[in-house]
Image (cartoon, rainbow, N blue to C red; front, side):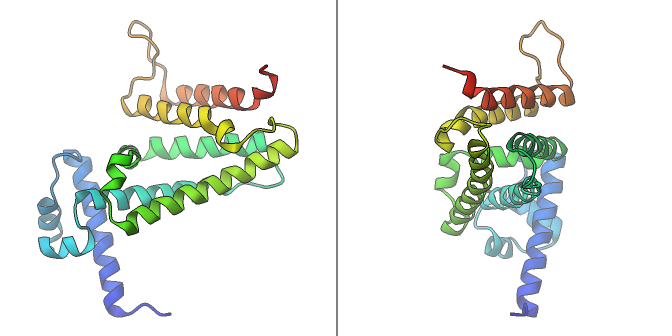
Length: 214
């Protein structure tokens, strides 16, 4: 069905609000910027802004959903003929690089991870996050299933195989966000690129080395 002029204008205005909000967040920090600030910067009435986003958290959620959707889409662009190991490694590289390239989006996405945050969202936003999680789980599940079939990975539940992987990934993102990539206060900080390479190496060794663990 062809998009109506009214719907097109609504969508374009929403994109303008998102782009302006991102610029303001980058300039002043996500805590300081208000819905009124966004309305003023776009010359759009505050009431109209609320037709798009009922609160600032809904705007955060939309930014996170757009960012994660793009990240998952790029991470899914894997050659199915390659090994599970290569596909997983490539996926981690894509995800880490995007979080580094877009630190503001990364910060907002991490904020949106908590149950407390999502509990206060509209049902449509909750459904959007749920779909993202399901799509990502399906993508990773297919990789893991191939790894199990090819005997690269042990025959375990997907949730158990990925539990430590997820913890390592989210912990690494927190360290990158704080720009503190060293283990101890008295040691020299590691560069972002070297840190990511080490984390991926550690994660892959842990995930694919499970077969050796008794």
